[in-house]
Amino acid sequence: MIIKRSKAAGLIVALVGLFLLSACSNPATGNTGGQTSNGTIPVVAAENFYGDIVSQIGGKHVSVTSILSDPNVDPHTYESNVNQVKAVAKARLIVANGGGYDDWMDKLISSTPDESRRVLKGFDLATVKLPDNEHIWYSSANARTIATAIADNLKAIDAHHAAEYEANLQRFKSESMKIDQKLATIKAKYAGTPIGLTETIFLYQTGPMGLNVLTPTEFQKAMAENNDPPANTVITAENQITRRQIKVLIYNQQAQSTITSRLQSEAQAQHIPTMAVTETMPGNQTYQSWMIGQLNTLEQSLGQRQ
Ligand SMILES: [Zn+2]
Image (cartoon, rainbow, N blue to C red; front, side, top):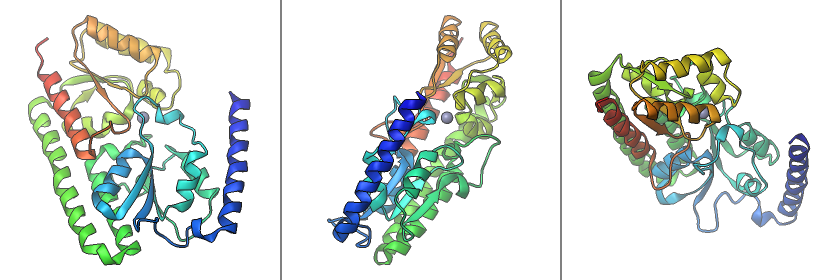
């Protein structure tokens, strides 16, 4: 594994070198023009939910490349590849999460230096932050803060369309308030309900809903960090299911292991509803529809008779 990775890293360095060489000998492919051939602003998002927000704000004036978008990939263990180097080198705006979540993006950025390129990091902009929890995009307040920063940067890059970016931002903000309304609706009906959670991602929403997460925090953290959870926390999580102490088991579909799969089957055996949440945005969704869709499913699960 280590040998494989260092080989891959060597290959990336070599290809970055080649790319930079060709960029130098042919200035037309470099970043100085600032726009793609069709006149749009090239943007790279490390994750597709940020890419979607950029698309919603930038409309037809941006061309967005989202790197992480495969729902079958665990983003915690992702390693970038050479295909992304060129897009990052050309981008005028980059949106990543930061906070240790996508360090591979830092490598891509530093391997293609460009002082005029703008870089936004969701984690650094976020005002709602939970301890040891980098999944800040699960807070709609953070999404609005990040959307505002995206709009500000697009206005600075392309002042000509500033009014359009502002209008799109206002629409995004008002649509995203539906997420907050849904959280409030669920809170009104189900605050205090005990639930299980395999990974820390959904804590940004269980908090506002007032749900009582019983699964040990150390278990959730280990799953988020791709580590083995402490044995006693596994036993506790299993007992909470077999003793039917939780009403719903929420699991992260993109951070699965044999342990979480076992918890799911134990929950099913106990007729406890299980519900998947995802780390990245599924296809054919927007940030808003993704968040609201998951919350609708949760509301149904919480209302299920057991
Ligand atoms: Zn995660």
